View (cartoon, rainbow, N blue to C red):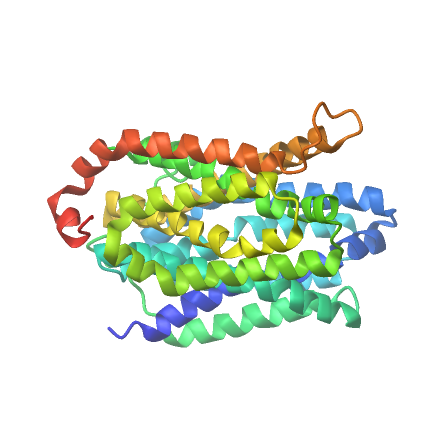
Length: 415
């Protein structure tokens, strides 16, 4: 089967998924004030509530959507997700009450299966030794969407607070039409797994998947690393303003450069790096680079030096796809949707917890009563968390080798 068109559809879906978040961010404060007649402070509170609702829905329903894709196939789940995504954006575009906005975020969170099901689809069509590199393509697509979303959203906001939602709805609908005609099914009767409510929830999925050798520790690493890496979207704007006196334009530019860096690393460099050193060494290398980058940002006082560190921080992003590739190879073919759904749930929990951790750390070390003035303290905390990830990963190597076996070792020679 020629995979070029399906892969194109998958990557576009991930771009839209990540772009949709940034697309609506520039207008959300104005929209909430318009709908609820709130001031900016109260609008910020409601914005946080809507974000939390979205993340909670992802946590609870991620494994459900993944298990449905293991039973009924990736194609229907992806297409239905895109259709509901388009409807959700239309609902947000016409919403006149906070109740409708809340319903929109509930629907959006439940059907935000695009990325996890896309990853399962990518796993289905990839050879074992290709999985990590292809997950890198998904990471690159996410980085592209991360850059394009705020830029397009800010431009469309000139036409009104509802314009970005109509644009997002159109893009989702267009990709649905594209996928409807070109996307083949990858779940065959050979790997189709009966749907079970006992496994279609975060706790049930964790219970079944944790029985695989080493996978529990990998999931712990994934969770801790997600919290550590959230320091960039969580406090970068506040850090840049406090430490370097950057304005919104410079902060947006620096985040755009960071997104481009991740897209280049995961889209172009992942495959040669994996071919050279293998998945497990790529995880260690990526995490080690992250530690160096976090420590450097913890102490840097010059904005241009912080920008110069962008290639280093982007290179550390190889750890995520490599880790995901190892987890995918440890699971069986009929568990790929369940696994990717659980990964989505883990990331959702990290998204709920991480903002509280990193912003509280920033506040504690920059407030007037701070024991030590250290705007870079959140990055130093992330460095400590990443070191913990390295320690856990080192302890899991023996069980991983047992799980992956000689075949994986032969297809991914380590140096």
